[in-house]
Image (cartoon, rainbow, N blue to C red; front, side):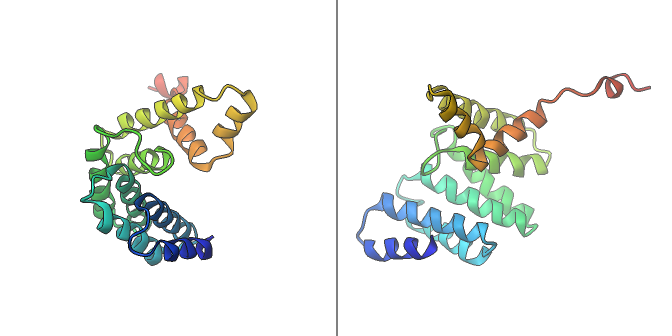
Length: 178
């Protein structure tokens, strides 16, 4: 995949489509991140921020901030991870449908970082992400396609799992412990 992403970026030159460049940079960042190539992932996400942060493309830069927050968290740099999440939180009120293709990676990342910091905003971000997931799914009328949407996309499953875990009632033995 990285080979074809590089070809795509090269073919754009310096004057190619901004939207395509954003997509290629995000794909490169995500691919490198999945392969644990943190420096290359960070370079892709940072290039996106450097090129587009000032060009009113906050919907796309939010995903780059989420990628960098994930990398920082993986490197145990909680201050940097939280800094990137704060950037995301500043974008969400004006543009809740952030991300290149869909917003769920951004919401899940923001939730995880906030939750790790015991930040009271974590539950609200998780709720917003889950509500968007449900909204997207409601527009899929075929039951098997909707099941595929929920179960075959990793970030969708992880968002659902986080939501269910945060909304699981305590066992009776815990509620009535002496």
